[in-house]
Image 1 (cartoon, one colour):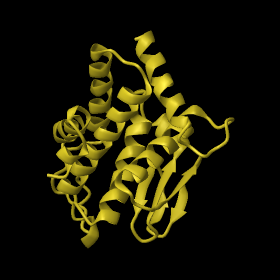
Image 2: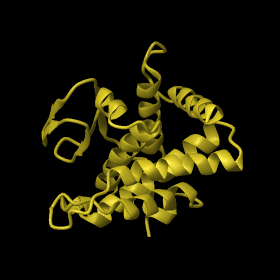
Image 3: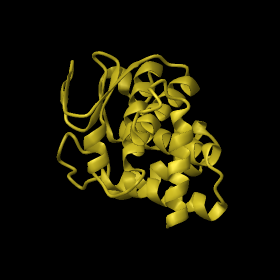
Image 4: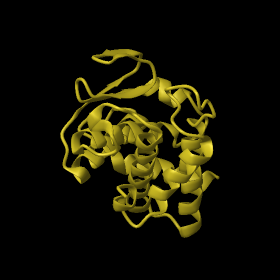
Length: 198
């Protein structure tokens, strides 16, 4: 477990290099920004992002944890809230990658985001895209063994499952824990992000 923690820190430290924030920035914030910048570059899309340390206002309303707002094409992340939301060390990175995936969907007109309708399928595709981005982060930015890569995938899957629910009658239902885990791992273990676009 100690080695796993070191690998997460190594990957996050490397991701900071992709971040334009100052060297004094916190590791998690830099890693979040690195993931956002990586996904924007990979999909060749332009959007804004705001990293705050408290709830913030967007054109879509108050953002307590994290959200993508299509009205202003902006990803909002409350860094402190996502860090405190889970003991899972990759949870904050998963949340950031998931919300960034919504920006990708919106800007590319995929997953139903272009119509403004967020469905379970939209959410699951975003989980898949997030899993793919985190796979890149852990496999390319940190030297991990096959076993350690599997452990990272396990943590990514747990992060996705943590945001699932069984409230089928709620319009905000985003998928069951099992569905969210499955799609995040599809992205994490897939050959590339194309697996998420099918």
